[in-house]
Length: 292
Image (cartoon, rainbow, N blue to C red; front, side, top):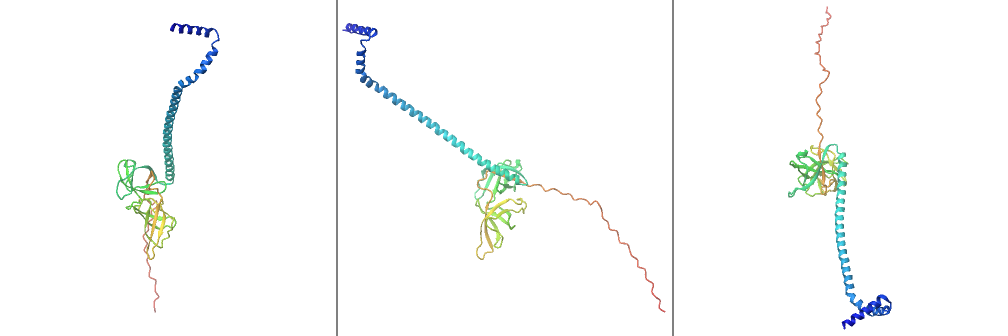
């Protein structure tokens, strides 16, 4: 049987290779078995498609994850850029105010908030090594910020204007009315002390340092009058100020070094004036007429 099949196969191979007599048969057989071939190849086709879909999905997930990470990185860079731009604007304002200040100044940066209850203090990165001293006036780009209350070698504590323990002599820029601006413990509010009801003060008036007392130089902005209330029959008015300095958000400040007063030596007079002693005047007696 096997020999017969081998002989038939050999004859068919010979006819296939030498003639085209078997082409119709091949076509018929191919048409006949094509459904079987399709059914047999279907699992492989489906497996390939599924594998391609899964591969594409995994690649898309990886790309999506990479894009999300990139978006976060760019968002962080953008936030840093915005922060740097705002800081640059603040520094420009600070340097602008520095050019307007007729005293020597030193730029300092806020590095912390003093952990003291019921006290509004900050810590800056300049100390005695930079020349800071207790009582030194501190500004930001908008006005008076506070004063140094304690120093060490590399840092200083600054008491804010609005601290309830802080007060300074001021005057109304428009009318010249003098007073005392005191903190009340609220970061963005000051109070003018002992203001008569007849004082020439209006809402919106700019209040500046008067220079009295010698600690704060004259003419620095302190705040603007935000409200003035007069109770019927009261002798004093209630006047509140809004600080011009950004006490709650300034990151850089200026330490002010007042100019030293020139020492004027007394000049000796070049010409000495002397007074001569008055000469004595002798009055001779006049001859009198003799009476006969």
